[in-house]
Length: 403
Image (cartoon, rainbow, N blue to C red; front, side, top):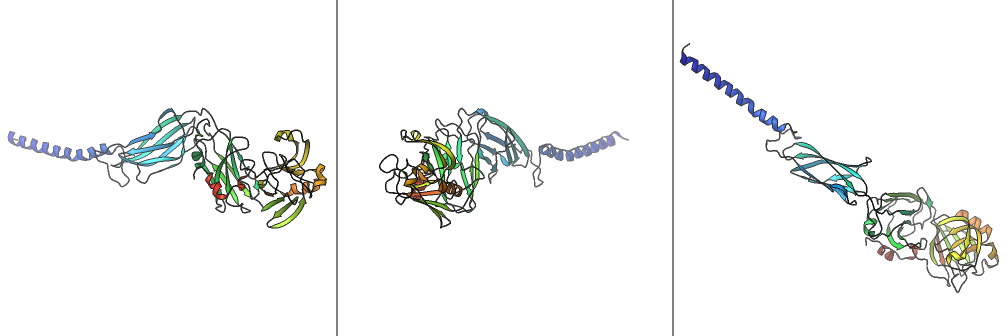
């Protein structure tokens, strides 16, 4: 072969190899970019595809509790977010319609460790998972709740839902937002804040009118992670109770006529002669609507505990508490000569042993006692037992922190 032909053949082979190499470089370049992920619609991301930047707040160690967890994405979209605490409980939330943010439904709670996993997809279609973690500071002070009625109970038509707090509640609106009432028949009602007889802060929920019999009621107090405010401390748990409304029983007490009448579903069941508080002084009874708080049975009653010196100190049967200040309905056989004709007690509504025994078996906590009489101490206050029914509906709504 001549030298010139050899040179030509060599140039041809070189051109063929170069062309083949060029054909292979293009897909190789695309594959090196696509190794990070691929889009849902089958597109391969380009070489300029940029990663999504994910920001999680709060961040760090021992950050203040009481704020929702927020996750944002820049340069792409969030496809899912999972937030769990150290015990495996999840904080629910929802990715925004534009895919740029996610916010938890609940607040972070004190003394917890949170793990965050955010799944994203870039503008070019690359899927990625980002993880973050933070911890919240312990609660320096804890606020607790005493609530009524208890779960699984059946109560009367005047029973409010009542929460009494161990410590002051300055952030009343924020606390009230966490209190959710569900009823089986969409009962209208409202929260009202007051000072309990014990001196503690308290909030009650009562319907606009007496409950309908058979109503099923659930309270979900989602307070965990809520700050009570100055001197109050944090709530570190949720509270819930479910109860049912029983028969429509109303106890009508006429102190001028010295009679107690039990009315059930609009029908008079029995009239009982009674004796109320002695007129003209501190021993008078309260008027207005009092609600049966508890059936306490046989208890010791000492007048000195309610500021009446040493008028009495005795064991009393069939005791039914109506106020925190010490007004009861109960058996009072020592007062038999006054039943039905005059008021001669230290403020309670007394009746015979036989009538008290029967009456005690008929009534339930939550039954209203509608008391009237000319010479009384005044109307039962909202915080003295369950006196919310002595406030007009308009005034009661105004006692909500959200009005």
